[in-house]
Image 1 (spheres, rainbow, N blue to C red):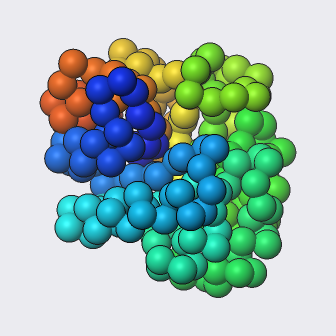
Image 2: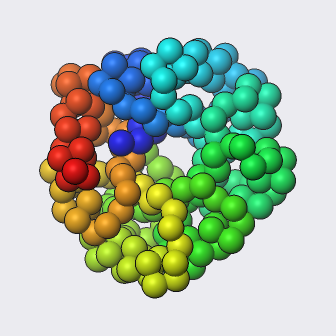
Length: 207
């Protein structure tokens, strides 16, 4: 499970991250889409400390320079962010670099550019993202995973975009590596328990 930070009326970015960590999530992405680097820095510093204490990976969305400055574990780059090859040139080989993909061609390009993992979506319509790419659904994931196998591309691929807990088993059946979630955790009645439940479902399928 990969938690993508967001906020709502009840919880801040850091609240959400804390609850996901308490629920056992080991991959956290700080995503503050409209924020400047200066606005993001204090939140990133706190989030990084929380992730270190929990032994979790800490990824920052988009801000490559902040990743380098804080020595975060990595960066996630969307389609309109800096290119993966450029980020790899800045950060070097030790950092995790994730790329957003909507098609197999995206995956192939990211793989060649040196991506560490793929965030693939959207699974369905989601309100947490503006300028959404075409919806993939289960068939879209099956096709992309199959093409990756045929091309010998062995990169972890996370399904993302409007996923609910009930969708997880059928998504994992397509062959994707993991599930990236935001609203399903943050908007739950008990986000910590919801995270535990999600991880249990994923582990059951993976074993």
